[in-house]
Picture 1 (cartoon, rainbow, N blue to C red):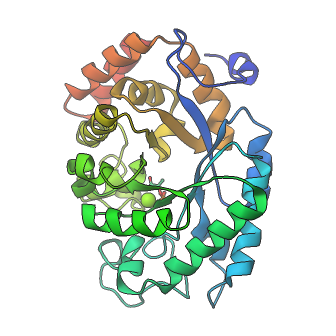
Picture 2: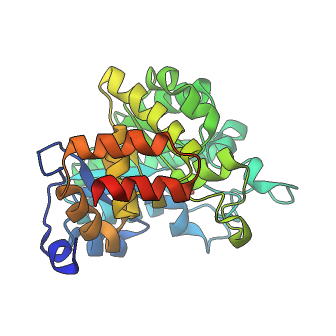
Length: 311
Ligand code: PEP
Ligand code: MG
């Protein structure tokens, strides 16, 4: 697919034979959401709220948070927006929330685990999201990062539902992918974070350049967990998206569609090329590529078989 085709692509996302796939943008603030709304993105698949607060020493108030969330919701004027609650810790430390001095922060108290330890920050953030939803007359989806167990998903879902919003969770830890069916009994949707899912599946630091071959999102083991998660969603008719870097690779995006993924969320700059590539193939081609990729042993073979089928 050449640059002209991707420049022309205007959504909504679908394969050439009409299988619907939402193509969404990852954003981190109101300005980014404004910019993303000028692309063909159908909405926001991942609003990384922690990135709004990297420079804060103290927790922002509910009103401060609500103002920031409103800017993102307003930019997309009622279209789909998935807000992720604070993913503090490890590669994204927040001074007011992270647990300092852990020997291994990637395996430490990060993401939803902070709320399991002290629920106040999460409760206030959910209040702020509910306030922003009411002020904008929108109904954002709300998801938690770093869920590892069905119990964590159930606890988060109850808090979100009590505020009248729709709960989901990220699948970034292999345990959550393996129990996706049970997690889905508590939530309305799943979103797979392939950056962390690769890190935790391959036991390789996502920030290590030396280990980049292991954290490659084309790793068949990572894609097997994606397949498992997508199948769990399909079995109960609930959406399963991908919002990690994998979704920004146009060929891999088609493979993800073939695995049963229903939405792809990537950097705004990649929305056009991903949407155009998905629109250039049939769902059957995506399915055949997905099946072939799952039968390979490594990322090099996986890319080769997928490119052979998808062109
Ligand atoms: C991921 O882990 O794939 C993800 C989307 O979240 P983040 O990159 O913010 O950890
Ligand atoms: Mg992550």
